Image (cartoon, rainbow, N blue to C red; front, side):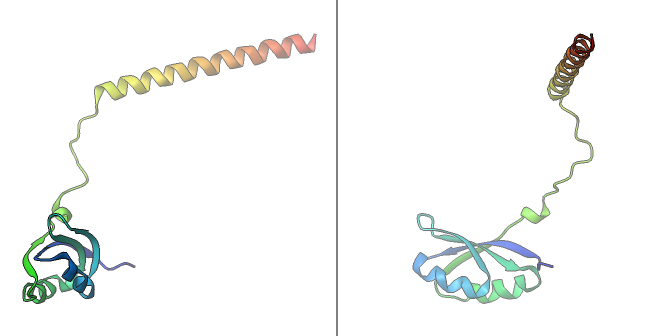
Length: 114
């Protein structure tokens, strides 16, 4: 099973030195214009890794990602009335089409048997 990783934004003075951050985790993105590195670090080593990275001469600031704290399942989400109406319309159209196909098949079967 994969280890749990957390996102970290590391602000650097120069993006050339950002390659040195590879030994601390997986680099996801390097912004040359804004001088930051988006990377993933093992969750159980996060505090220790941040302490070490802050001591590097080219690192100006480190921010943790709060994405893992955001809930993704919502209990009291209300259904969208417009979507429900669209689904009912679609269902009615499919049922009407199926009905016409059945009547056409039955009429062809009676014509073919006589």
